[in-house]
Image 1 (cartoon, helix red, strand yellow):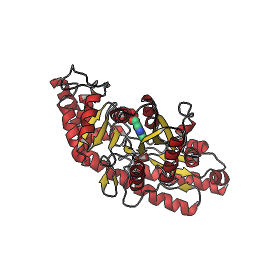
Image 2: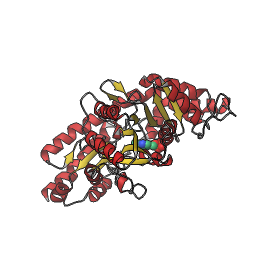
Image 3: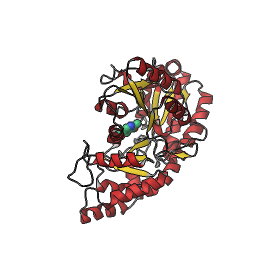
Image 4: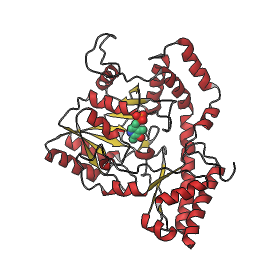
Length: 397
Ligand SMILES: *Cc1c(COP(=O)(O)O)cnc(C)c1O
């Protein structure tokens, strides 16, 4: 690879080559048997997903957003209900609350893990009640692949009699103190969007739960609220199924997922070591991602924080200019997320737990570096060399 060729931010083509002709064979099999909707691969994938994380039920569905909405619908969320969500997340987490006519209440996140702040959650619950809303549940996001601090969140939910749903769109495959993502809370959702750690070649998602009754309702809502047969509708549902072809693709990808997770771990460890030594040479510029003890991340993103003032002082540059510099030497970076949800046009009029100052600061400071299982040693070297040259040239200016 030449020195200016762009490093892939996410690399799905190398993964495809690794799987060889298994994907084509799996897709071809579906084309031949013709069960394009709810074919045998869908049931097989659900069986394997449940075993993978140890949940009693795995219910596949159309995408990660519908997965969240299906659970809200199954729980009877309605107007007047408050659902607590972090502000520093992808829009889907809050958007689904509004589909049901309920009110999202935005909660701040922690400055080190970027996950829900338990203290802010307490304030959000009080805020909801003071506005005459009924706090019903919490959607907790495992941002960038790391589970939130569930012992603390669960205690608060129990105390206030709220249900807990985990938005594991970025964290499927991770663990929290010996518990797998998919087994925490009343239900966990995930997304198989192509760029997620476990992705298909289109849209897809799943819901995990140990609750038999909830599982049965979710399966009904997924197919137009069907009863015991196709043309009996016992509730209002949606068309929320996963395509059989996507299920067939996911079965193949799931077979290498554990190896891919450990490859992501290795890349993250290298980043950690190199950034630590960079931090010793150019202090106060980069905050390295922090993972809680006894918790693992699947590194959906490797997201650092750049101290704005120090960046300006040592490098004379803004984050945007720093990104341009990196891009010019073939290192792509992405901002996840440039605006917290409570500042978005679509959400700015909904209640906030407090001033959400951490979410606001993060939006100004975060930067995601290339992260995928196929980031070769050579590419990693190029990234580290690029980062140190850009930062240290700046330090001399
Ligand atoms: C991707 C994502 C979703 C939505 O998943 P889709 O499959 O794209 O609908 C929801 N929540 C979070 C945190 C996500 O990252």
